[in-house]
Length: 129
Ligand SMILES: Nc1nc2c(c(=O)[nH]1)N=C([C@H](O)[C@H](O)COP(=O)(O)OP(=O)(O)OP(=O)(O)O)CN2
Ligand SMILES: [Zn+2]
Image 1 (cartoon, rainbow, N blue to C red):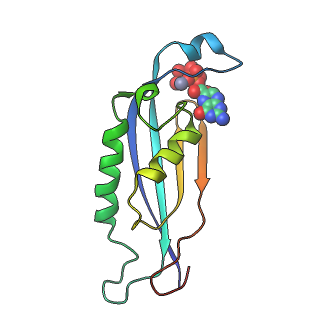
Image 2 (cartoon, protein in one colour; image 1 turned 120 degrees about the horizontal axis):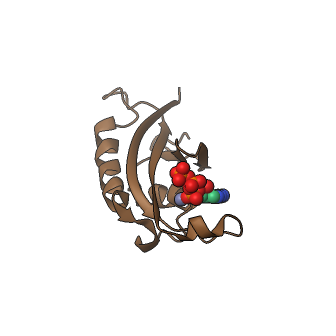
Image 3 (cartoon, helix red, strand yellow; image 1 turned 90 degrees about the vertical axis):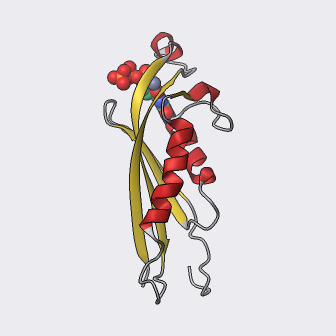
């Protein structure tokens, strides 16, 4: 049996974005509240009954949030242009290799847009995936 767990967090951040349309407003520094959800997938450890302890995931996400919250995203190392796509990749890469992440979604409620990065399932310790 395979299970999918998820954990959400949010952060407030500023950015600019170099776009072909709506350039002027996008190039001015402005802020958004971003929401993110990280999905992990796997089988239960028979001893713990868990795919992974959600407390560990919460700790990992607190560190990721710290790298993004109240920041000017244009200046965040390794992010690149501060798009939803790059935020998904950044969050996935910040998680330690032990986290069996299969997807990351980032969205802005106020604008109504959303981006989901889907990753291939990681091999499990018991050889399944
Ligand atoms: N493929 C993508 N396209 C666009 C992205 C993106 O991340 N990936 N991002 C944007 C803009 O940032 C987004 O549309 C928000 O627009 P913005 O000018 O930043 O803010 P608004 O004024 O529209 O929204 P408010 O939060 O209400 O101020 C565009 N395309
Ligand atoms: Zn914006």
